[in-house]
Image 1 (cartoon, helix red, strand yellow):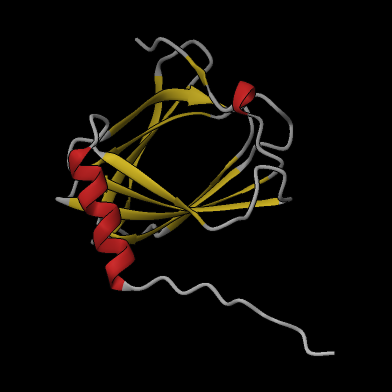
Image 2 (tube, one colour):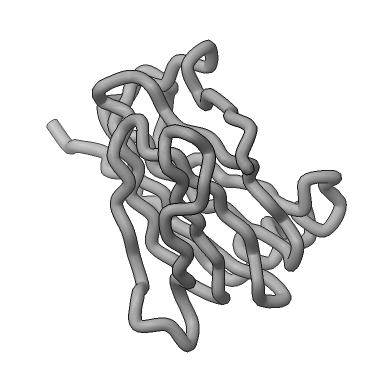
Length: 141
């Protein structure tokens, strides 16, 4: 019996299409899922962002909701907040930065903003994914 293995290839055409979709999006970002189902134990996705795209301050409340980000192209700003909504730390990830990847823990309040013309992020997180608990947004000072 022969095993059929389907390799996933991420080529420049797919990436260009993600940037085009991000350009057309109100949020200035788009994503491409690399996992098969929201039930997969490991969730993997590419996120294309255009300059000015901003993910509002939020956290993930479930104990398995850590997030791992690697910036493959471009530069993004990550802001960490204390529980009362004040800024705790700001740093850049990606091109022209010493930081290339980060892992955020559950309940770690953060926001993400694309600083370069465009940026491509690889996000890895534990599944399963439950849309009811995707993000908890907060007001910041």
